[in-house]
Image (tube, rainbow, N blue to C red; front, side):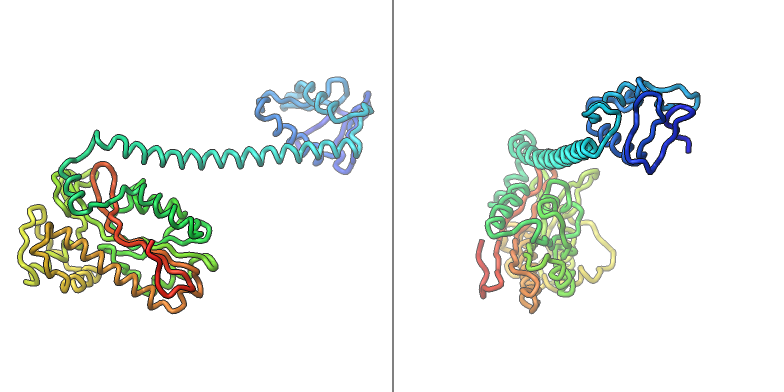
Length: 400
């Protein structure tokens, strides 16, 4: 009601089909069509014409646009210019053919804006990808500047073929892409310890979740798939139709700057803590029960009086029969970590084998297994130990 077009004797007629702008005659226009037209034209010129300087009007007619309550008319030269652009025959009317030209201009402008939107989204994705590549490049190139010699030496001794997280992610991607895996047809699932250190940005789980666009959590303490067969069934039934499953499983272990395995100085903490705390806690409990001899672990002498929860009780029960030979190992915590890998592998395999309708929903399942090595500086590593894939028609998996 407050928008008034024209002088005192001018009016807006919503049902008129043309715009009349000649002499002193009353101005009539199809309000909705003209408003839509002007908005699209304004949008098409938005990159070069500031919104606050765009003024509508027609100086050589009796039509005026009142810009504020004082009645002061705005400059109408821009409106004249636009009108004359589309009033090809100069008769002061926008006829059907001329309006078709306006519609064509609107469609062209819309396609241009759509192209710019797609281009902008593409460039944004490129920037994100480039940022990750830059991080990985810097991590490798500058590694010698912040290397922890004792930690590096111990890792090379106990986990000799460990890969940086970014190299692992890239290797898995290149291998599975050749087999038809893609973010659109693949559901990524992981069975790793719930410890927050395993979820750090630019490390294995973050990189792979970003790569495959979503993730299903199967693991609990120590990386065991405590989601169980019910959880695995839910994971399976979330896969895209006739799609593929990608499972990564791994226990984890820290190595601190002194080269102590099972130890990790976490960000924001001055004290050194354990990693994996659940696996080491289970090992210490088995020592107390006399299942293995006392291990003089310098970093882990603090007592923990909490009651073991169900997950930790299960870890203790599964680890107990696997301690034979630990006394002759190079490092007891590394030994425990490799045993945890074996436990998780068996449980994952059991979930797969016992799921009878596996290939009713999925066409292929790929499983990556190893050990995650947490480091305070330089990024985490992954010691690959297995990479297999089983297709619907196969009786035995491919060793990738």
